[in-house]
Length: 98
Image (cartoon, rainbow, N blue to C red; front, side, top):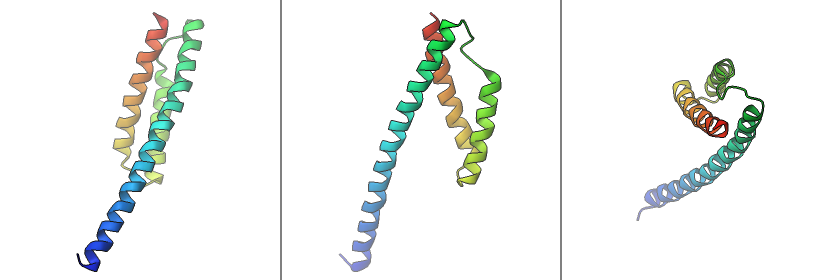
């Protein structure tokens, strides 16, 4: 192997290690987020509140889009991701209300 190929292989290994570390952070962050949303769902069920809050969802989507732009992340991707998470949360909240 040439020096350039060896350097590229080392860089690839480093990038993959960073990706693996970030995936771990993402999963743990999502788990923490869902722990809080489960608590919210229980509170909503206990107080007979609706599982969805469209005004809050709209605020969160706008906020995430701004964060995405600031972070140089595609805001459409960020919006789709948050909408997916919100739909999962709403499903969990509905389960608490049953």
